[in-house]
Image 1 (cartoon, rainbow, N blue to C red):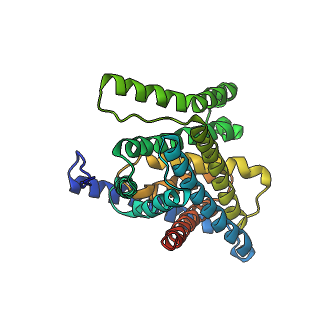
Image 2: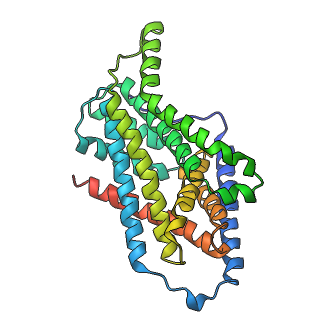
Image 3: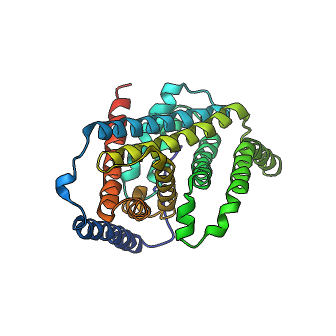
Length: 308
């Protein structure tokens, strides 16, 4: 399969300028929060804990590996049979290129590596789209489940609290129905377009994939919890709040497609959300540290997978 360089409607200089501006403003916000907030913290009482930091790195690595497992289940759910080892290697190898400028490189890298394994273009394209959609939908499920009631009140949105349970029911129903909806959509296009390759959908694999994605979100929330307790006292009751902050900032950063991996955007949003629970400077430091941990973990996984 020939891989073409991704093209966007906007000129390159506009995209570059927008990226520099958005990322620059985000890190300016983080830097300002740290400098101003440090005046409110007694640095003599700040004693970083290495064990929680190490646990955070291991937990994030586990979440990355779960992502590879989910990709393998997607391929299996679409009727493709590469081994789990092969699928994880493809996923982790493609994962590292998301730090390159241009949001499409991770997608193209995964498509290229899958094609080398003999997977047809149809399942590759559907699989990549399904993976992205599943990340978004499970992330929204996590947000609805973990959104702190006190934050809704502080934002003047307390009236939304009664809608939490219906929201959970709706999102759960949608996730359960997703494999069937995908199957119906593929059959429709096969019938009316004629050129769509037939794919035998395996529902159980896709349901298990969605379950694992939800597990991964909670693992990432626990990662953020460990990063925070390494620097600042937190109760285990704060875990849902931190999970919400991670999921909301992750999905928010996905919307800024011209910034690789949402760098700067995710940190800014995460720091803003953590300010409701942490001192300003501590929130910004934890947000930056989360990015460091993610880069280290993904680099470690990439290094390890090359030796499989």
